[in-house]
Length: 252
Ligand code: PEP
Image (cartoon, rainbow, N blue to C red; front, top):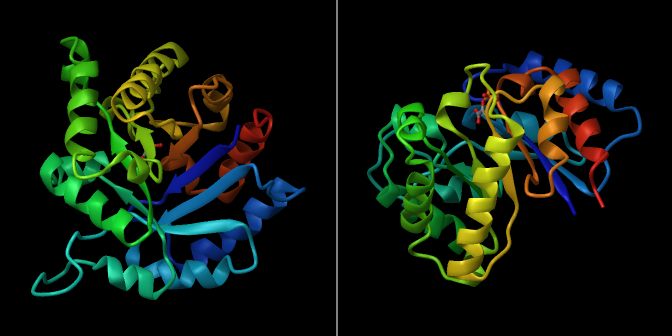
C-alpha cells in the first residue's frame, strides 16, 4: 500500500528557509524518494511559485493550504482555484481545523470548496477531527460522521475516490499531545467503515496532530493509517525526511 507524508507549513517559511529545507531534506534522505511514498508540502500562497521552482525536477509536490469555491469575482483577498490551476498547483488542503476555527469555515462552505476542487481536477486533502470537549463527551464518532456527511454531500462516489482524508484531532494539532496509536486507529477504522458503507469507497486516510520522528513509526505502521499530515515537524527538512524514511518501511 502506498504511504503519504504531507507537510503543512502554515504561515511559515521564507525563500531562504525553503532553499535550506531542500538541502537538508535531500541530504537526510540519501537514497531519494520512492514512488510508493508520496510527498507534498503545502506552502503559503505567495511562495507557491517559489517553492515549485526550488523543487522542480524532484518528486516533492507542492500544494496550497486553502482556496475559495468561486472562480472569480468580487471576493477581495481570496484566492481563486483558477489562480492555482494557472500556476500548476493541483494539491490543496480543504477544511484544516485552523480554517474552521479561526476563519469560521463551516461544513456548508467546505462542501462547496470540495465540489469545486473536484470539478477542477484538484487532489484535495479534506481535514476532519474532533475537539477535546467533543472527545471527552464521547462525541468523536458523531462529529466525524457529521463532518464527512456534510463535507462530502455534493459529491458522488466516483468523485469521493479522488479525495484524501486527514483525520486531525484538534486537541493534537500543535499541542505536542499526539493521539495514541489505539485512538488514531479506532478513528481511522470508523472513517474507513463509514466511507465504505455509505459510498463504497476506500481512500487514503492520513493522521495529523503532533507527529514527530519519535512517534511516527507507531502510527504509520498500522494499515489503517496511510500516512501523516505534519505541521511543526515539517518545518525542518531533515526531520521531515526522517518521517519519509519511516514511512518507506511500511510500503507494500
Ligand atoms: C497540522 O497543521 O495539520 C498539524 C497536524 O500540525 P502539527 O503537526 O504541528 O500538530
